Length: 470
Image (cartoon, rainbow, N blue to C red; front, side, top):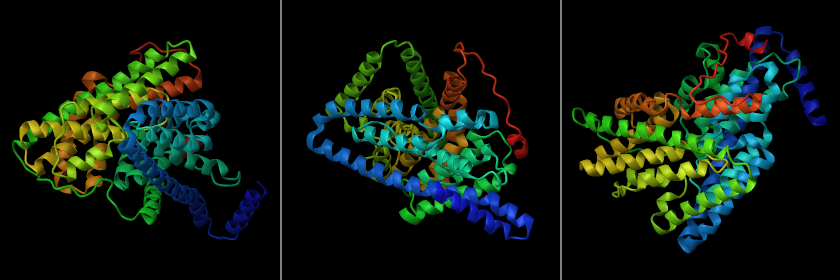
């Protein structure tokens, strides 16, 4: 603490020596974003590398002693859940709903509640819990957790600022952090920006565009500095066909949009059912049963039941083995449902993309499409399923576009996202993250349970950064 105090005093002395007040103010307001962005990039790179190593170890175990997963997965799910309950209860699940909830609560009166959602223990537990689960073959991703980790980093940097520092909007800081986290996780800067605008904030972008763009760029460049300039998936061969191919795109978009929304609805239904558990052993039994079921299917039917699903995307897009069995999409939907409801940490971004890819691969096989058109349908399936879960069609389209560098099919991807977003409302008019966000807010505010279907009023976000701090 003495060292931190010395650093703060030195910073104050350095900035006091700057005579231009406007320049000084701009530097003081920009510096926290720069520092937090670099830290976010470093955290994202570290997490991605360790996640990949652990997933490789899990593959190794499967190749040599697959039957061990029948024991290993339930144990890992239990450990992942225990870490969350014991050390950081709000680190469970994806992390995106927690960030959205923090944005809703971003005012001085709710500081203590925001600190429960975004803090240092969340960073550590988020990583550890998800890594343990993926070691056992769990169907979780690192992208959603990276967003909460990034939000926590930005929050910590904001909290560290001394009292004399110019006020910075907490909401803008958290929004920029989440966008930077997504950009660093997927190496998709435009996706991070669109995600912040479409999902995270109701404040007009003009009020924090500089901070947002800067955070995304610095975090992305930091990640690229360690991992190189890379595509999350790789450049895919596609054909920007017209005419009848749009019918196939519409078909896969409708199916994936409905199934993505249905998967979210099923997860929420299981959460509601589990809320009735009165004894601790009931939760333990549920976790063990889910782990055993996933392991049995993965060991005796197909290993595509396991892990985040990136292997499915890369195999179907970049090899001659483009088609998958009809039951693979069912496995890729059931797996995340069971893993996500066990109470550990782990995201649904990558599993959702893998589910959409498997559906696109199945449909393209049934339609006897060429390899290039099969790839197009797989990409549209990824966009459609992710949109069914998140209801962010433009974010989904831009993410897939940047992950594969396929600018020639941008209109096909956007069409898939829009159609999926429209039909998903048939299953549930609210997104998966909206439901979870409201649950976190209710938990934090200790509000009574709200009957199903009741609209929960949430105060609109102010358009002025200064008012946000008052």
